[in-house]
Length: 95
Image (cartoon, rainbow, N blue to C red; front, side, top):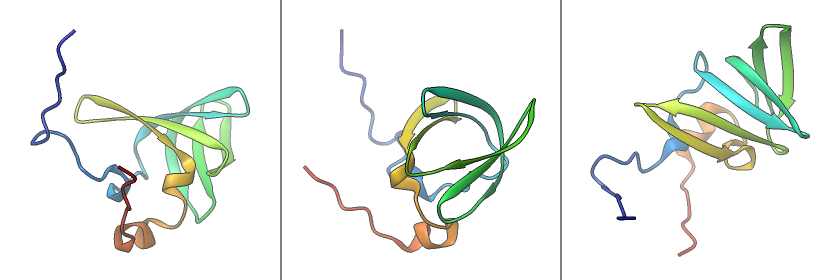
């Protein structure tokens, strides 16, 4: 299988994108919640599902979101903090 990595089309820092209003799927404690992100605090997501509003902690969840027809799976620990603070924060790469 060929390696299809095109750095010019890849979003280099997905953590700086505003996620409120985006459709997503959040895996938390073995359960999957699908819906729209209605609010985001420092440590939690508030997601509007079919069954109502759910509050899910960021540090124990994995979020799957589609941006520009590409699926991203992000550990909630990387998205910890308010959106305004994440924009300022520098991501340190470990390679």
